[in-house]
Image (cartoon, one colour):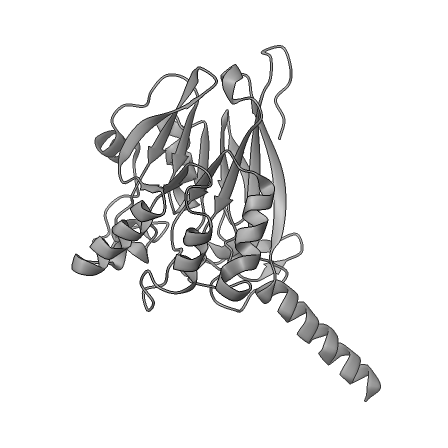
Length: 286
């Protein structure tokens, strides 16, 4: 009986840890193509809040983001949930972070469902709190006299699944990115897009570094196997959390900071990515 109680308490503590607390992970991404002005550039990556809360008014989350001192904040979608639109905990979070750092936002599938006045109210909320909403466009980020290109891509709902859309057509192809974003620019570039499952396409397009979310780390993570399930109902999806590489391109996949409270060995996490310039003769590393 006592052993059973200990096991039950341990399971309850594990559940609480994996679903009601969050961690911060620091990642270094180095590249010989990074302009010198962006050496040491700190990116706070947050995704898939799903209107969750950490502390009253999301005060714990706000405090931790500010503590990291980011040069820029990237939001990669599903910060709201379709049931709650843009109200509540998400609103408190961005109000607490308003104008603290340049901030950029791409839609996830939940934001994609907003229409009419709801969509207008959401965009107004972002703008009022100093967040630039980017949808199928590119711009230049500047630091210390140097520039890098930032792309923001919105994927239609037909690309939610990682194989075929509803009509059974082909997978996402590079030509779609060319159509939405134009030809890729020379020099170091960053792509923001909610769904990571098309990373090979993003790499072929020419994005040096991509930021995504969507997969929630696979919800349940198993030793040696990784995340078990994606929101697209794909078992053992290829990209779930952390950094992945394809030739010189990399993708940072956030496990999310909220969502369904069914995580196992998959703590919600904020990512802080520091860009590092390496001389051409130096080996690149993560």
